[in-house]
Amino acid sequence: MFANRISQTLHDEHRATIALMERLEAAISRRQPINIADPAGARLLADLAAAIEADTLRHFDFEETQLFTMFNSVGDQLIGDHLTEEHSFMRPLGEKLIAQARAAQADGFDADSWREFSRSGAELVQRMVVHVQKEEMALLPLLDQTMDDATETRLYEAYVQASQGTAAT
Ligand SMILES: [Fe+2]
Ligand SMILES: [Fe+2]
Image (cartoon, rainbow, N blue to C red; front, side):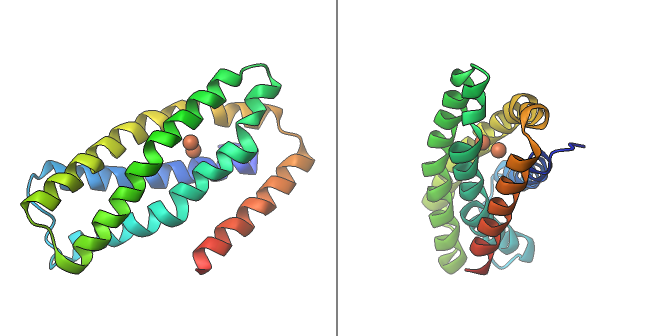
């Protein structure tokens, strides 16, 4: 879909994130605590904890440190600031959800912990869906149009290395 490999990689990660958010939303909307004896429920908790920690937080860091500056270079610093602010709302939610998912993996949910999990999960889903739509419409096309080949190669290698480093730990 994108010629630029950074745009394409981020796009693929956005799709994976949205797929995970859809599973989370479906589990929350059942309004019954996820049963950790149910393989699908157990898998969702494991996937959430692993993907948010290894993929989502790294993805945010990369966008902020390497990409949002490109908006500055075309004179639109507000967009980068806005997307950074959205990350800063989602980071603590994501960290909370990792901790809640790990605790549930060990002990299951009771009514209170399920309510807490549902609340942070629903907020993360809502914020993430809107955020990803904005990036798909504004960030990825801009990168695709403005990034030169040398920058693309350098950033792509750095990104692949960072993701392999995270995946290995
Ligand atoms: Fe982002
Ligand atoms: Fe993103």
